[in-house]
Structure formats: structure tokens, C-alpha cells
Image (cartoon, rainbow over all chains, first blue to last red; front, top):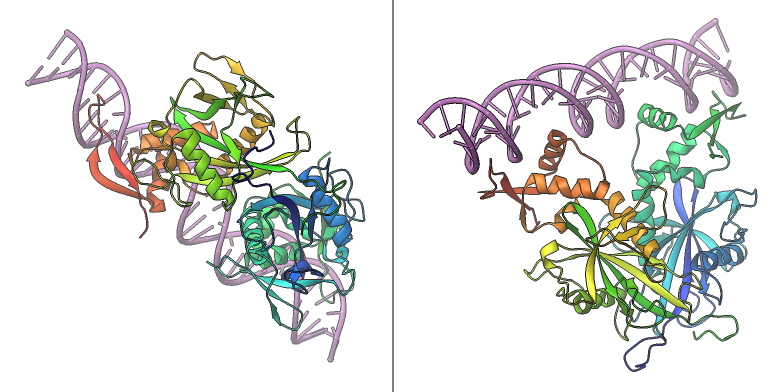
Length: 241
Length: 241
DNA sequence: TAGACTTATATGCTTCTTGCAACTAAGTTT
DNA sequence: AAACTTAGTTGCAAGAAGCATATAAGTCTA
């Protein structure tokens, strides 16, 4: 099984990089960490790490999530602090021969959807950045709170572009918007999530009808408080079983 | 960049496996090759191979397609013998620590959609097998022409299950059915492709309306010949540019 | 050659979904 | 009490999809 012809076969390192997405102020944001090594010293990059022995790719991604994003994980099933599973899914594998200038590194990218309050900005060395993907572009753009634009390490801007495209496509046939919200949320908040991801206004009545008809929302009978004006009912995602 | 702690970090081999799908007799079929090595000696398996130095994952998949399936490829753009590109797309990466009993092997799986007449059954060592995926199952079943069922090497039955699910999902929002047909085809043939993939009957009038309204079909003005009964018009996929 | 047969293609109708706009409801602020 | 803002509902029109039927264009058979 060991490749015999070492002049021909490549023996790459394999890393897992995780795109941690969250929503803040009506915008998609991504968690980045500052590199402390060459190349791309001091550049912002996706949290990631080499896979370990005896560990599956899913487990490696959960570990990265736990160690670099402070999100608890548990035997393949990553969990939010509150105990609910975090949405974590394999995205795509990037393997251009020169994506890392030092050596052959193949990166299995994952993406996670996390409620904003659960993303800990652990230190100066990690932070949330606004994420923008223009149509037809194959790299995403990254901005800090002041609107300053950053270049990312390696091909991470491409990875982000793939992530945003994936979540947009997925949203049109699966209601993963929940994953970015707290356990209880209003329909307006859910609609705002969809609008932020899809980058377009949605019709309120249609959105409500579709969501309620899907049977995935469970009304709690409780309402927002202190909003000024009429409070909206709180729903939760109907977890089967 | 080299992982330092060799007791902890893993340095796997990386292979590319390609799920070559085609359609024959109204059924999805997959190209398998017979293994000539341990483990799983003489088992049927997906065509695959180690990645080479200087080669991207896409290029590795195209090379596997060329060498193991006799399908011409060219600089990342794999092409049918006739000159049209073959549909080839990355599927998913499989990396359970013990999926290969000998060593850590991570497999980046691709899938290709190929017109039946272009799949060469090169020798005794390769063949097309009927592919069946039951709802809720996470492994696909494999049958030969006589209806005999086979077990596959490694986790290849799981890879096939993921491939079938992916193509089913994709078909509902992208008309990739073309890729399994010759350049010119009738609407009945196209509908048969969709029905074979989705495993359900479709309404003829609705299917025609939707396909023609999509603007992706170009009528050729020519018709089938020698079919007995009324010949249907031949269409081709509208290639932009 | 007429008529039976089979499949291609078109059309009308119903049902369901979606977008749009107006309406009512329930709070807060002045 | 009236103005204001957002929540939530309802009616209608446009479009998509399922279903049945009608017509068209060939071959086959008597």
C-alpha cells in the first residue's frame, strides 16, 4: 500500500481547516486566526491543524473547533455550550500542488454554523471578520469592523468563497438558518438570517407561510420582551426524537 | 510546516477514487475494477490511485479516468472521445482511520458522468455494475448483469451511496442528465435518465414543459430514425459561448 | 390501402406555491 | 387618546406542476 515510487507519488501532509460562520449585525462573519509562523506570518487565516493518528476527519474538525474556536465538541458530535450540536459539515478538499509554498499540503475544509454569542474571540490572535462574496468571483473578501480589507493566507479566500456558495445553495432546500440563531428566535430573525446569507430581500408573508408549513418550527407560546412595539412569538427548531 | 511530533500527527497516503457513473437499460451503473492486491484481493473496487507530485486533485482524478476507464482527459478538462468535456466533480473525502487495514489512507472521491458508449470495459478486470441505493441506507448495493450481488473493497459501498445521493440532489436543481446521454437525444431519453436517477416516475407533460422552458435544450430539427412508430425530435444541450 | 397500434407532442383544467399588497393586531411613545 | 411601529393574516394574481385527454406522425398488419 505504501507508494513505492517516491519520485512519482506524493506523500502530502493533510490538514483540516474550519470555516466558522456566524451572523452579526445582519452580516455573515467568519472566525479567523492570526498566523504566528512563516509563510504568511501575521496574516489572518482559517483555524486548522494537522490530522492526528487514529482520528477521523470529522473528529479532527471537531477538535480544531474546540481548541481554536472554544466550541465544545464530543465524539464526532460537536456541541454548543448549551448542549446542542453545532452544525459541522465537510465542505471541499483543496489540493493544488503549490497552495503551500513550503510543502505539499492537502486541506480538507469543513464549515460550521455557530450562534454568534458562542464564538469566543479568544485573544488578540483571533477575531470575527465580515465576509463578502461577489457574484462570479471565486474569492471572498474580508473586512474588519472598521471596513478595512484584508488578504488571507494561502488559498483561504477561495475556501471561503466555496463555503459561502455552499451555504447559499443549501439554504434554498434545507432550513439551516436555525444554526446561526439562539435556541429560541422570532420569524423576523430567521428571515434576517436568510436574507443575510442569500443577499436579497425576501417576502415576509411568503417566508412565514413556507417556514410554518415546513413543520420544522415549534411555537413556544412565549414572546420577545422589551422590544418597543409589538413583540413577536418565539419559535424553536423542532428536533425530532 | 512538517508536523514535528510524529507520535501524534499522522502522515497519510492520499488517493483519488473516481465513481464513473453511466446509464444502461434504464439503470444507473458504475465502473468497477478488480483488485489485484491484498487486502480485498479479487474484490471489485472503485478505480483510483495515489496522487502524484505536482498534480492537483482534479488532475489526479482526470488521470485515473484516463488510465483506468479509457476516457481521454486534457489539462484538467477531461474530454469525451468526441471532444466534449466529461462531467467530473469532487464528491467527498473519506478519512476514517481504519478504512484501509494496512495504513492510513485518505481518499478524495470524485464522480464522473459518462455516456454509456464511451465507457470501455477494458478487460476482464473491469466492468459495469448496476447500482442500487435504498432510502435511509448508507451503503449502496452492487449487482452484475445476472443479478448477483457483490461486496466491495474498503468503504467503497459508502462512497457510492454518497455519490448517488449527491447526483440525486444535484439533478433537482441542475440538469446534469445530459452528461449521461449522447450529444443528441430525445426528450424521452432525457426523462428516462432523470427517472433512473431519482428512482421515480415523472410526469411527461410537466417534464417537457420544464425542460423546454429552461432554455437549455436546442432543437436540432432532426428526428430519430427506425424506431417503429412516430420518431421524436432530437435536441442537444445548449452550450453557451 | 385502410385501419390498428404506438409513441410524440400539445392543450385544458385543477391544485399548489409564490409574490404582492392591503388589512388587522398588539404593543410603545407622545 | 392618537400616532407610530412592528407582528401576523388574508385575498388575489401569476406561475409551476400534476393529470387527463386530444391530436399528430410514423409503422405494422390485414
